[in-house]
Image (cartoon, rainbow, N blue to C red; front, side, top):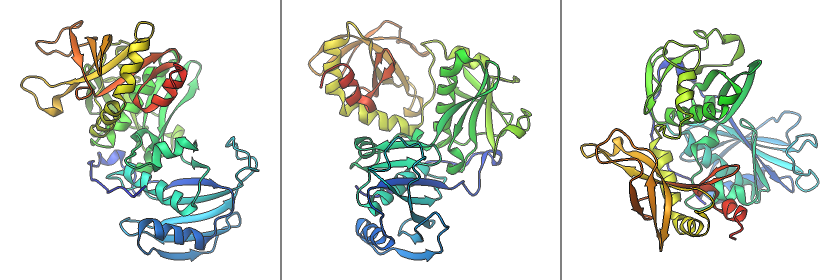
Length: 397
């Protein structure tokens, strides 16, 4: 486990969507004993292989100690602290098994909030020595045991950018919901929301919000009122809370996604009900998913050989138009119909407006060609990042 280098992968959005400074980000890890300030700082210095500058502060009544720490390579200081757990914290982990918390609070760099978030998690885990679980106080997510190691602490591990936020459905009137992120303010950006969503469209609205949230970490959101294309046939307009007359119902800037000159995204959500819709992906998320898909390819082929006659197994393959560049790549889904050693034959399920590609075409796909895969389980699709759980559900372990 080591700290990751910071990359400038983004451009700041229009001023209407900027949160400056970003909202603080907070993480807590569970420990079986109270970690002293001295032990935490020594462990921190040992982990990074360099001295850290520590200033001890007067802690509030509920904290055992509080320290401001300057870590070499980080642009802003971090606050470390230790507290005893509240038996009523609702984390689902007995206080008798893990009664203390070590925490860190800091700012995420707007140019690459994911890397800073991962580094803060690793620094906190190193300071704690041994962690039972991690609790993100912004999203209220809890990761324990192997899940924590697999997501954040293993060598070469990079979690998906969606760990930076959660997407919630908030009922605003009978059978009308606002689907919105919580967590992007700490990334220096407006939260993303879709208003006036009927219950039947929750899943599509979740996909829409998560997709745009991921894109906004790499691409600048345009000014309010402008229309942007986020996929094939998917054109949405960005509107402010003031314009939507929702200022009293939200905190901080929120970018509302609606159809052109509309108060909702009904047309966009309807398009997303089709199995043939395609949405743009961020470069970082595609790179991560491609790496995972290729690493787990042999396991996927094994699953296909055993299950593809009873469960739909899909592969995603990048196609670049004849006169296009990598930026024009279409990642198209195909259904596995035959398997061979380390190879599958799959049928094209949907095609862009490109000559030479027809729905139903069959192609052989190997590990060097795939950019993702998924198995359509009854509870929903499962992909490379859930391979162990998938094998368990299929009783292949």
